[in-house]
Structures are given as structure tokens and as C-alpha cells.
Length: 133
Image 1: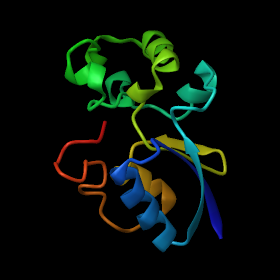
Image 2 (image 1 turned 60 degrees about the vertical axis):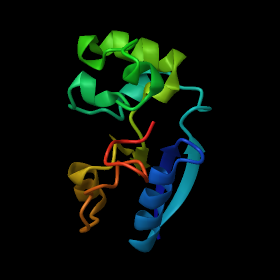
Image 3 (image 1 turned 135 degrees about the vertical axis):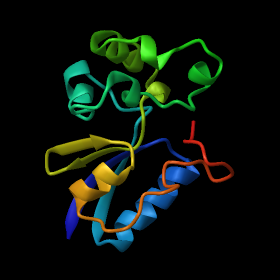
């Protein structure tokens, strides 16, 4: 069985749907809290690959929704600095498959995992089409 380390926000319904999809695809999940992990900048950075910095952010995080944090205004160092202080800002899930790291749950992540299902709506909150906060 293939094993994934899956960093989530505990209680997130979107993460629950994502985990169910991965388990049905034959993955064993080691689930960890994205909020409680003792992140270091270099470790966190590895999950974002070549995505634009704004795509590293959870756009539904309360501070982003209130306009206190503007993801488009950050460079990599600044984004990592604020995410280390406020991990709710990190786009989730973070996924580690044998050292291959990714963030989010879009088509590129599913392709990396070899899951043939569509990711449509899989980053959305249960009651809306927006990503969860």
C-alpha cells in the first residue's frame, strides 16, 4: 500500500473528502495537523515547488478574507515568514509521497499521485465553491 503524509486542518470537511478519495485510491494516510506542525522555512518551502507565491496561500484564511494579508504582495521569503507565524495561511492539504511534496488538491497533485479522478470541487468548502479556510 502506498503511504502519504497528509497535512490537514483538523475538522476540515474538504480535507475529509480529499482523504476519502485518496483512501479509495489505495493510499494509506498518515494524517498530521498543518496548524500544529513545528514548521521550518526550508521544509515548508519544499511543498510549493514552482507554484507562484500567491498560490502558496489559503485564500479563505480569515486574515486573507478580511484583507489583512494580500497573497499577491508577498515574495517567497515574506510568505514563508508569515506562514510560519500563522500556519492557517498555508494552502492545504500538504502532501508528502515518499519525498515528493505538493500543496493543494488540484489536477497537478492528483496527477503526481496517479489518481485518475477529477479534482473539481475538492478544494471547496462543503457549503460553497470556494476553498476552505
